[in-house]
Structures are given as C-alpha cells and as structure tokens.
Amino acid sequence: MSKRSFLREFFKANRMVGSMLPSSRFLSKKMLLPIAFEKAKVIIELGPGTGVFTKELLRQMPAQCQLIVIELNDAFYQALQEKLQAPNLHLIHGSAAEISAVLQRLQLPKADFILSSLPLSNFPVALRSAILEEIKRSMHPEGKLIQFQYSRGLKKLYGAHFEKVSIDYTVLNFPPAFIYTCANS
Picture 1 (cartoon, rainbow, N blue to C red):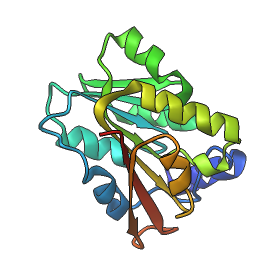
Picture 2: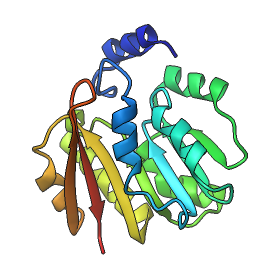
Picture 3: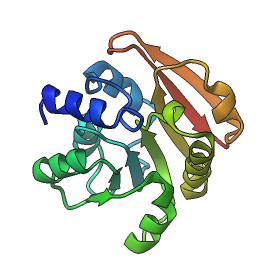
Picture 4: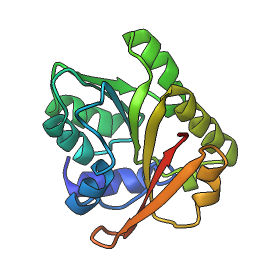
C-alpha cells in the first residue's frame, strides 16, 4: 500500500487510523524489543495497517510461533492479504474486541505478546476499556501488551488494566511515539 493510499485511509477513517503516515523502522525496532521470540508460541498484532511490524515479526519469529494479525479496515486488510503469506500467519478481518473468539476458533492458547497500533485515545471510553479487557483476557499470565500511542498521558489508562506499565519513546517517527509495555506479573 502506498503512502498516498495510507493517507486516504487516514482521512476516510481518522478515528480508526491513528496517523497520516505508516510507522517508521525505528518505531518498529522499539516495538519488537520487549518480545522474547525464542519463548513465544502465540503473538497477536492488532491494527497492523500496512504491515510494517508484521513483516518484521514474521522475519524474527521461529517457525513454530503462530502470528495472529487482526485488521478491521477493509483497504488495509486487502493489502495485507495480497502481500503477506506464511504458514504460521493467521490474517483476520475483524475487531480487536474478538481476540478470545479468534484464539478459540484457531484452537490456540493465550498470547505471549500482543502488539497494538490501535489509536485507543481516539476511541470512545467504553470501547477502549472493552478492548483492553479483551487483551488482558487473551494474554498468557506472563504475557505482555506492547502498544504505541502519540500521547504520554495514557499511563493511567493502562495502569487501570495492568499491574506494570513502562514507557519508552522514539523521536524517529512521525509523529514521535510513546511505546507502552504492560504486564500483570
């Protein structure tokens, strides 16, 4: 998908697409840093957009690790379907609020890591809370949520759902991004 197409999707659905440009490789590197690939059995990516993180996940994860990618946007989903294929990739056209159902349908255990590019700060409060609870329910007890946002002011939100929340930052992205890593153990 071109930058122009990405921009068109931003203006068409800017409450669901958080940025005018795809994520940078610098943000991708920081998002994947907390992942222990050698231990991961299931990784979930929410809101992959153009697949910047997806491609890197597929490159780094072992063959026995399963990657579930959930995208709601029709254009992004179609583009991902055309350019990404792997035996351990499960591309789902749906909502982040359906993670448990997807895991059950695929007969997979809870996720070790969940990466999210969802612009949660744009979502209504009830939807944001429902998605975070669904993430928590779908994560292995020692799992991690790795979420980027363009605001530092969301630590309280994540802290209401997770016991541990740490924040990293990258200026080498437009706009600069905050990376929240959340866990319960």
